[in-house]
Image (cartoon, rainbow, N blue to C red):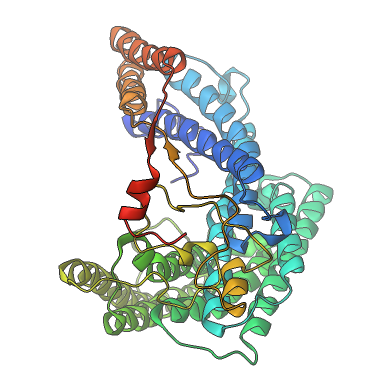
Length: 480
């Protein structure tokens, strides 16, 4: 499984698949960590004039807190992966009980990362839902300050609940109680978000576009996942639920009902801005309903299958255990989800073949991105906008302005030059990873030399970039 528990992940029980896991996650983790730092630095230092922290869109706040989680969560899994790599590749015994190793240490290192990872996945979806619901209710997001507080609190509490995955390992009553209480506590800021989304819609002029259907469908679906999470936070009850299909149902209500619903909402919402074409609304709604109904048919019965004793991570089950009907319904639902996904792919091809262009602001949006053309030019804004409050573009619309008020005169725009060196760095790490996996240290050295040579060249090369001149901006018809 994705948890790669030791000792099952050691050489005597597992093949090269775990080596792929160990090395691939370390390499991918480097990129994720650098990306998180990049987002943090960008949001702190490069906001538009007037864009204070309490004027940032909720999606930006979600990205900010998510990046902070990445910064502190990924080092823990990196330590665990390095120790596991030493056990597998260099004869270490960190997780070998026969040689004094401790397998529970892996569980701690994994879940100190693994539970914040759940919020790394879901917080951006929360940000998407906040943007979509506010736009299609034609109202300012209810309780913006409390939403910011709730987002930050979820990020903080996310580091205090990891051992609820380990209630059955024998941590003791005190540890189980503390982690159970912390897990219940994290439901409070999540509940704040749920009620604020509902109150944003209350009294609004709601338009049920495809994007908004996904956002509205997200709310009850994720709420069910959150409620079963509180059930799992009770240590005595968790002894029954643990490693059963009840946990499978909970996990998918949170990740599919949360992350995937949020992803679909965001894709339908920002597709015209990204690609300059509108996704077909009819296909989008069929995509939603088939996937939504299929999802609940698939995973809702699994709560009861788990309570009836069906363990997770099995590919079959015995007859005459009263498990047949629930599994049959789940299978039918999975076909519904498949049809919904296929409809989305069809929608992409239909949209790509269409010659109709999307306007700059198809949804009557509230945030800065809707003030520039669809898709945006490479420089984004011809002039840096002046932000005069929350929902900056909406403020300009209410004031009767056609676009954003500029914070600077029109002039040349400095752009960075493209470079192939980052790709070559990644390629070098890829080659080195294969060398480690098959104990071919010549290949390892070659791969690392390529990576470090690219880093050196990137460091010493003074890239002057290039300029897009004022007359070129005007020729492209971008209104300042």
